[in-house]
Length: 318
Image (tube, rainbow, N blue to C red; front, side, top):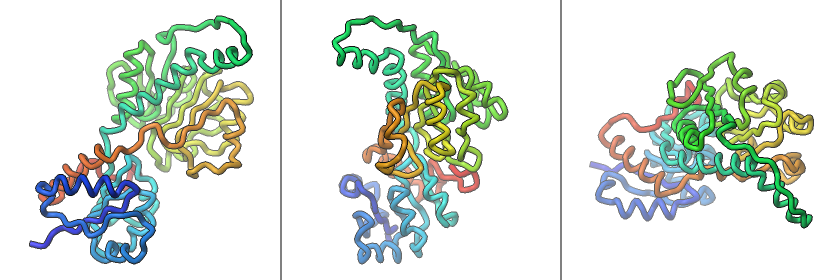
C-alpha cells in the first residue's frame, strides 16, 4: 500500500518535521515529501505534482495550492482561513485549528481591559511629570463587556470576564444559550453596542461581517467605551470611521490586533493616533505543538475515511 504523501510548507516547518518524526509510529501511513518554506520553487514542483496532504499557513498555501494536482486536504495552522476562502479551493478539504487559542485570547482581552480600567497609562504619564495624584477608579463588576462572536474563543473570554464580576453581553448570528451571557442577534446590534463599556470583536470574516463596523456602528457605541478587534481586520469598513469616532469622543480608544493588510504599512494613520493601540496579530498565535496535536488526530481520521475536525465551510465562509 502506497503511503500518503505529505508536504509541510510552513514558517515552522522544522518544528512540524521534528514532531512528525517523533510520532512516526502513529503516522506510518504518511511520507513527508517536502518540508520547508514557499521560496524554493524547484522543490515545490514536487509538492504541486505529488502532495495529497499539506500542512501550511493559509497565506502561504494560497500562493500555490491551486496548482497542486493531487491535493485533497490542507491542514491549516490558523483558526481563520479567509485567505483560502478567497482562493479556488472548494474541491479541497481545509481543516483549521480550534481549542488552542481561547486561553491566549482571554489573557489578551482581559489585559487590555485591566490596562484601561486601572488607568495604567494615566499613571505612567503622571510619573513622567513627577506628579503624585490619585485617580478615581471604579470596580470592574460595574462594567460591561460585549463580545461579538460566541464561538469557542468567545465563550472562554466570556467565562473569564464573568469570573472578574463583569456583566457580559454577546452578539452572534444565533442564540447560543451561554451561561452568564445576555445574547443579542440580528437587528439588535445597536441595542447591544450601546450597553458595552468594552467591546471585543471575535467574528469570522463573512459577507455579512465585512465592513460591519462603520461610522454608524461606532457612533452607536457607548460614549467613552473601548473597541478591541482581535477577529478580522475587514470588519472595519475604513480607518477613518474608527479614527473619527475616537476624535469626536464616541470612543475613548481602540486596541487593534488584526488588519486587512499585514504588516500594517508604516504610513498608516492608525500609527499616528495616540488612542489606538496596535499589536501585530499576536493576540493568540498558533503554537506548533498545539497545532500538530490537531493534525495528528485529523491524520488518523483521514486515514480511516472519517470526517475531519474543524472543517472550513466554504459556503459559510468559516
